[in-house]
Amino acid sequence: MPLSEHEQRMLDQIEQALYAEDPKFAHAVRSTNPQVHYKRRIVKATLGFVVGVCALMTGLVMNAGTVTIAVSVTGFLLMVVCCVWALTSWKRMTGVGAEPADPGEGDAGGGRQARRGRAGRRGFMERMEERWRRRTEGE
Image (cartoon, rainbow, N blue to C red; front, top):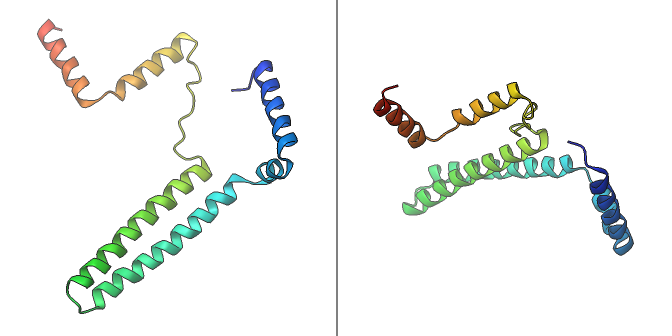
């Protein structure tokens, strides 16, 4: 959705104020591609996952009792955390999973579809209450 003229002017004023206040920071922020940041996070998460696998294997090979369990569990948890970190970074980098805006919310057909979509996302208890209400009303 494009910005209105007023919003665009305000954004331009904020940009100019930022450049006037700290031009070095403004240039660094403007020239940085956000995808590079997410790629770095994915690489770090991959390295963390490899370290987690090594810790898990080390814990399995060691013969020291409770220490081996702690090392193995720590390695496994590190693997899980790194997987989640990498997946969220990948989603943000590619835009996968971002909910698009309802395209036809203003017209009658799109509005009905949007309402049906929201109704499909109701919680379990809300659906059960609706069923009970329909049953008691005799529909």
